[in-house]
Length: 340
Ligand code: 1BN
Ligand code: ZN
Image 1 (spheres, rainbow, N blue to C red):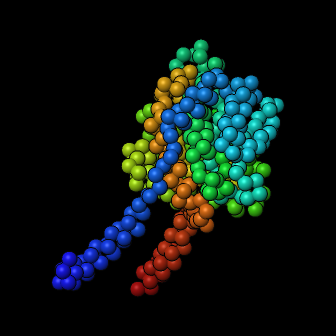
Image 2: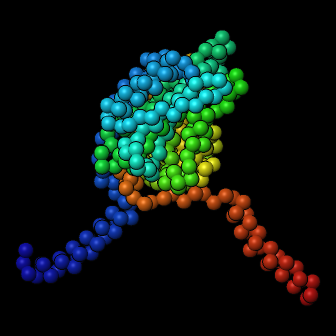
Image 3: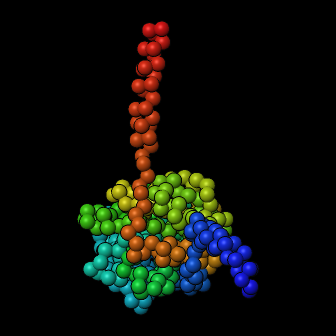
């Protein structure tokens, strides 16, 4: 390169460099290459289903809990059984931590129990039989198991995995929904509540035609962060920008405790939801992979940071602000009209 071309090109090159750096920072390019393996996750899904239906208090669920515990322990995680009794039934949440003395700032949850009765089955004779829960139960659990395998050890202490029991028996024999997560949150002291930056729930994330609109009670700032990662990874046809409505799910007790929380859930529910047809053939490794990769990047970008996710402002506060601003104006206008 001659001196002249150096003089001509240098300012242009500088402008180009500055431009590309600013574009990079605006688009927030993802540099992490995901390690999450959807085929592995699918194997974990089938393994759970091989125990058969897994309703609370059943032998099958207890064997499945053992399988989850042994698998995560083989990846080096510490497992605690959090036992509780509900409706005279022995239930257990499984909690996986990396460092028992450190508070993890990111909590990931999935329910591992399955519905005791196929209450939505088209055949009335099937409606008292238990479901296999390949999508509704095993899929979220499978994603968490694979995340536990692939996370690098340098970020594991920022993460806690919780496998909830007794989520899916609502409306049967006097049971309510989300009992495992309700119990888990009831056991948190205020210091632990304050130390959790985000709770991410995965539920029904295995369908081969996966669609994930934005669940409407989830914390918007946290949801925006996850959906933005999904968009950047090219998954905007799965992580939809549409409103998925409000779902009563295991993220709810966290929201009620003032913890930012998001529910990643397939809605409208697939046709086989709460029927005997919720079997592994409806699920795919590709769908599990999309969700797992997005969460892997989310963890890499948010572990070891002090970042928090602002809670949503209740609508009543917005209404209060509008009233507080507009009322004096209306009153002033009224008196002005009366006087002149
Ligand atoms: C999610 C999966 N849920 C049940 N199976 C939560 C739920 C509760 C969905 C009530 C609809 C109604
Ligand atoms: Zn269910």
